[in-house]
Structures are given as C-alpha cells and as structure tokens.
Amino acid sequence: MDDFLKSSPENNLSQKEQKMILEEKLGEMHELLKEGYHKECVKVYRNLQATFTEEREKGAKAVRTGMERIERLVRLAVILSALALAAGLGSLSLQALMMLKTLP
Image (cartoon, rainbow, N blue to C red; front, side, top):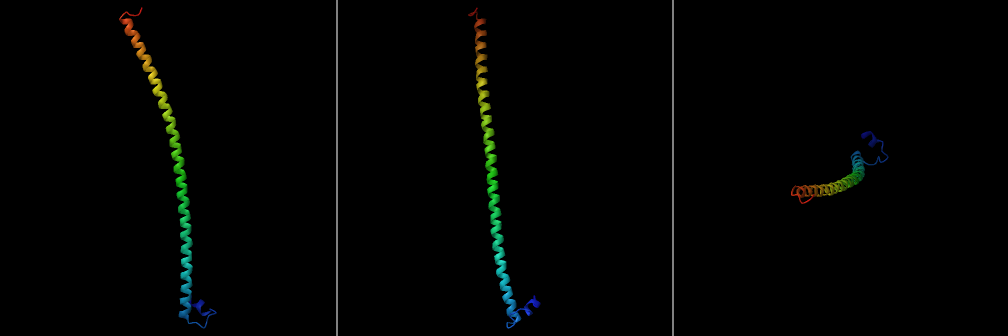
C-alpha cells in the first residue's frame, strides 16, 4: 500500500493524507458492498419464504383432498352400517314373530 501511495499522482499530499484518503475510499466501498450484500440476503430470504409458503399451501391442499376422500368413505360406511343394522333388526323381528307363531 505504501508503494501505491508513493506513485500516486497526488504527490503534493503527504503520505499520511494519502493514506487517510485511501482508507476513506475503502470505507465507502466497504459500506457499498455491505449494502449490496444485505439486499441480496433479503432477496434470498424473501424467495425462500415464498417457496416455503407455496409448499405449505400445496401440502395443505393435499391434506384437504385426502380428508375429503376419507369423509366420503366414512359416510358410505355409516350408510352401509345403518342398512346392515336395519336388515339385522328386520331379520330378528321375523324370527321373533316366527317363534311366537304369529307368522306361518
């Protein structure tokens, strides 16, 4: 760095002044880089957040679809159970009536 300062076109400034100018410029560049890095990190964070939200919604939709199918199957099972119960009770009633000899 000292060699660069000696060959600088601003030879009328002292080395200390040249060094301060360079350090100031480096500080400005560092701040610009930090801002750019921060912006990129924010972009990545938002993209990831959007991706996770989208995937969560897809998963929730798949769960809802599965639950709807299960609900339909449960309704069918309840209907078939009710029909089986009615048939069983009818058969039991007929047997009871036959035992009481009310039916031929």
